Image 1: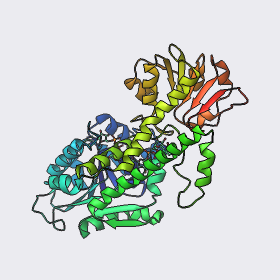
Image 2 (image 1 turned 180 degrees about the horizontal axis):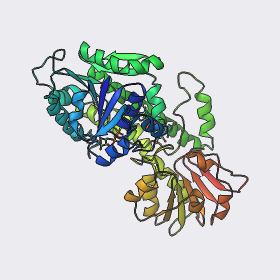
Image 3 (image 1 turned 60 degrees about the horizontal axis):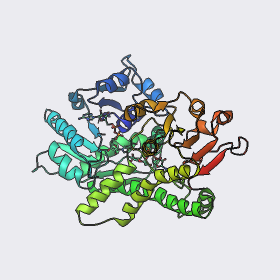
Length: 436
Ligand SMILES: NC(=O)C1=CN([C@@H]2O[C@H](COP(=O)(O)OP(=O)(O)OC[C@H]3O[C@@H](n4cnc5c(N)ncnc54)[C@H](O)[C@@H]3O)[C@@H](O)[C@H]2O)C=CC1
Ligand SMILES: O=C(O)[C@H]1O[C@H](OP(=O)(O)OP(=O)(O)OC[C@H]2O[C@@H](n3ccc(=O)[nH]c3=O)[C@H](O)[C@@H]2O)[C@H](O)[C@@H](O)[C@@H]1O
């Protein structure tokens, strides 16, 4: 099939490369010329495992390519289905900011008016319930159009991939949710996903637009709350001198709890859990419902960076001291620093007048724009040199391999927010874990 993807960021680029790999002819449309150029030269615009290989294989400039990128919306006219993968950031009041989605949908709507045949537009971005029907569809069709016969069929297909494992997650989903309010649109969505489902047999959830939208928020809210709950439990464990990871391993054996998302520590960051929990809280409040559990999940999460810093305070007055921050990305495997826990940690250190030296294998350049005045080391070992303390903020594998480098520290004090396996005994570290 001919598929276009509007928005070529973390989701749009991954989805485009995977659809091309599955045999579709794919066009990415993005307003950012540098992203478009990068894809067209066969390279990945973001750091994501497996993505460079897929783009290199499918965006070849030799005319055999199944993937190309453009800034020209007219490219969608040569396709059957368009996925909207535009950002849905958080507004200042916590609500979803739909301005980018609406601008993209408006331009798409204007473009599609030039098309004779029916076209299908699928919202893949995370949007609060009723957004697709109330804000997006009216920009694509006339208000009087019936869903079944409208010139543009409108569907909603939430995405559940994680950064760092995006390609694998997209190609091996736990479920595919197809939301539509009419049969023709649903059939078009099935047709696009048939190639994926042929090679990976996932359950398909057919539902209406708003249930598809809510399923995405419920998924993220549940997972974010699970992490906050294990952090709450982890904080209690710390009070009783109990290892929260031993407790988590034990409760994870109960199928009803499950072993995933039980890693206690600094909590959740990233481009989705923080904004999505706040957006659904805000949307609920607008209907008059106060979601107590979700508010508590946010509160616990917001408190974890300060708890880490307080553990450091108990051991060292950091005023004027060199403190190494190991890990800046919101999780390993990505260069994404959006809402990374490293941000409140660095802010807290600056407030305490510490001299911060930060290291991340891939996210330092991104962070330089956010904190231009701190020092950035070229390696974890360089960051540790002469530091009076080190904070582990992201659990990159390479931190688990650190060994002699600890000997170069002015004081071998390590406060770990992510439970990395460190040579505590061998190197005589003064070690403090956040929840263990
Ligand atoms: N990042 C993730 O892991 C996941 C994100 N999502 C959701 O997917 C959506 C997209 O997220 P990301 O890919 O992370 O966003 P992103 O910020 O990485 O990428 C968005 C892209 O859209 C482009 N863009 C902005 N305005 C445009 C316009 N008018 N026309 C064409 N292109 C335009 C930007 O240049 C950028 O390349 C969000 O709703 C997010 O919540 C869902 C699942 C996973
Ligand atoms: O909507 C989204 O964008 C995506 O959000 C998350 O994916 P992602 O944010 O990429 O990464 P996760 O692996 O879920 O981690 C999120 C945060 O939770 C933290 N986390 C995760 C698991 C855990 O046990 N403990 C923990 O602190 C991570 O360090 C990270 O900061 C969801 O897992 C995806 O299903 C969803 O598609």
